[in-house]
Image 1: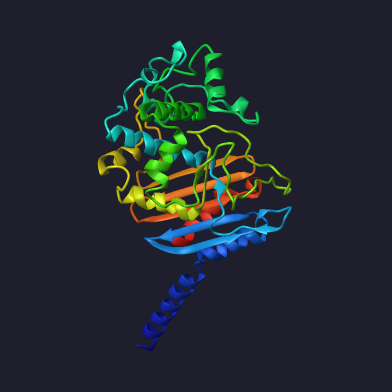
Image 2: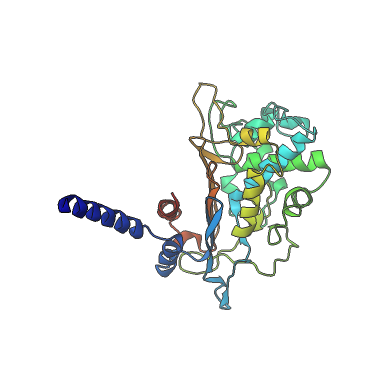
Length: 337
């Protein structure tokens, strides 16, 4: 009998030890900060409860200005989720259909006259990515469209492949402006930012003033700030708290209907029958989690969402080269799963 009791005691002790060994998310964030691998802001939610909400480091290193939870970071490609949401809102208003040709709304090169809005959302249109233009300061959507007119062909037959294309989301931005009769910035403000009270989120233009803005830096802490002016593919500054408001709106169908939300998080089938792992501006894992990352100049962004358990991981940094995003995500996931 004593042996049984002792064995049970040992078993319980081991369980308690294993449980206590599980790190708290804040400890993981602190570790990355102390190693010099993270300078930024993080919000982590487990089953609807905030378990970590912190800001560590500087928004302006030269002036020694510390960042806080209201500091706005450039979120790069996380902006695509706003573009996709805007397209779905316009679709719900009956102003466009997902299988409409993009050329119905804006002028495109002849080789692109048959690509659809749906294909642009899924990155299966074959439209070339404007990677070679990234280094041009002040780059605009018009510059990208003009560049597309200088090309002769699509990269591949639409729907035959998945190939990430920032250019495709710039075309979507142009469609949003044409259909709504408003600038991309105004439409996103009217339909998403203002209704959700995302008070520290901005669609960036050359005249935009953001009082509490993070400046971008490279791994050596030398300035490497955001310097282009495209919209649709990027162009938005935000905070983890504001992105969490967007997350909750998507879960609660505040912006987009339940049916259309399901469509956003459904991977597309390619023409050969293979399934792409991309919905509308979200990478999908087994239809249980959705995520996207972003990175440009000194900025890097992470937005991971558990679609079933109301959990998410949002991390924004203005020293992107120093941030091992994949390792960070894996380490944080261990603390909330």
